[in-house]
Structures are given as structure tokens and as C-alpha cells.
Image 1 (cartoon, rainbow, N blue to C red):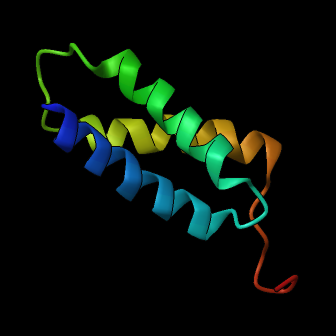
Image 2 (cartoon, rainbow, N blue to C red):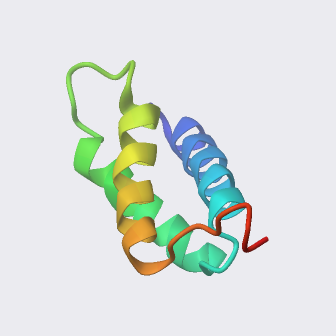
Length: 73
């Protein structure tokens, strides 16, 4: 992936996580997503990188900012 693809992936994953965890600061989420991306940047199989990035970042954010249930919203 080139830099444009990387930024696009980070933006899309960040937006999805922020939508689920509105209490989490967007800058924190973007940083976590970028860290997850960097861990997988040199993987041989690139097809699932966005999914793996989102999964790892979502787990890290969830531990600090549990999502609201329908009853709380």
C-alpha cells in the first residue's frame, strides 16, 4: 500500500470505531489505528489488513471506552 492507501484505510477504520465509541477522542483512535496498521504494514498477505487493523484497534479502544448499549443511549 502506498501512503494514500494507508491514510485512506486509517481514516475509514477510525471513522467506524469513533461511530461505535463516541466517547473516545478521535485523535486517540486514529493513533491506535495507525499503530495497528504499522504492526501489519509488511505482512505478505495484504487482503485482510483493514479488517485485522480494525479488530486490533477496536479491542484496544473497547478496553478504555466501552460502547454504550441501546438502553444507555
